[in-house]
Amino acid sequence: MNSYLLQLPDELLNEIKHLAEENQVSLDRWLLSAITEKIEAHRTVHLLERYAKQADYSRFDQILDKIPNAEPLPGDELSMNNEQ
Image 1 (tube, rainbow, N blue to C red):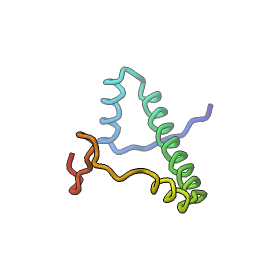
Image 2 (cartoon, helix red, strand yellow; image 1 turned 45 degrees about the horizontal axis):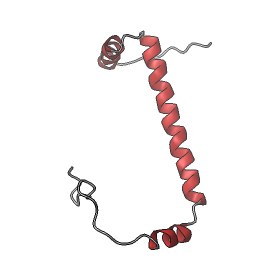
Image 3 (tube, rainbow, N blue to C red; image 1 turned 180 degrees about the vertical axis):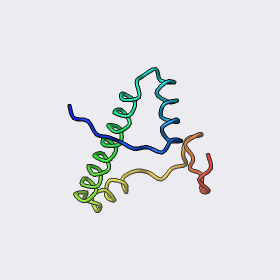
């Protein structure tokens, strides 16, 4: 395993220490987990972008056209002002 010297602002480091303590893990383990999550999120975005480029949107529209237009079930309504 390699190591990397990471300089963090004091405020950020204190926050990370608090979160690691709260989660009962070492600072190193918390940072490794956070970095891994960021990498996975990045990979997921790129995978979805690749899928979007390959998508057949005309076929998608054809499939959606087969779905009957109906009122949503109670609780499934979309809010037009982004409030939920």
